[in-house]
Image (cartoon, rainbow, N blue to C red):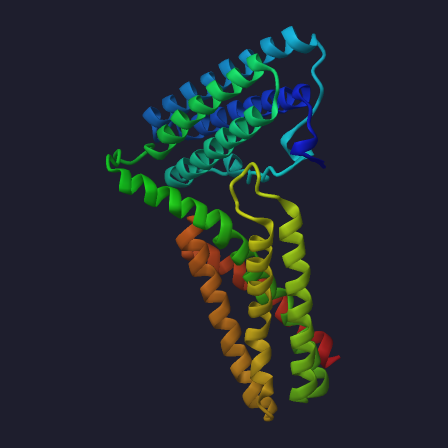
Length: 317
């Protein structure tokens, strides 16, 4: 992956063209999926898609004037700092509120990219076009906020929406990823040690080591995945720390009961802690990620049960 700071003006334009084309296709997919139940909203996504095509054509014309016909192939996944988008447009049926939030985040990220790019280019024509496109994406973000809901007129409501969005990007997403990994991935080594030794102290040491190791690994992975310069996801160190700490806590939750010297008491308590952790993960996914609670609980419980069973089977063999 290439750092955004290392891109030349031609590569910035090529990346912007690729991004606009991808956004157009995403909005067309939303419109197609929503047309039957929400024709007005589908029509709005059609108009947003058409505007993205217009933006793309403007960028292509400028690229042709400045650099000629050949357009380098550079995509968002080639540049460090862009967040990979979940392919929610492949799902049927689509939840209107989830689509609205997804579109809002898309436009916020794109507008931020154009402003950052405008600060780095030296050509006046390129800078002017990028600033115009940033303003256009701001209007799309506002439009996405109002899809399916009444327009909130107060500035306070807008600030609360922005604050919530940033909170989810900077803290909830990395924290949830860490909590899920720590709670699930450490089950196998912990319970394998427990049923292999029936000794609480060695079991605690294995659980403690697995939790700390997973926390360090996940923390570094999150921090290195995105520098936050384009997406507004915050400082990598903060996100990495949140993800790492939550990973470690997720594992330590069911390791700490093995400080109790009685094996069966400790194991029973560890089972209860695991259940609480899985319920907490399901609630967070429901509250912040718009996932139905039963669906979130089923997904988490199935994954946790498989890892849990693997640990017991390995430890008992």
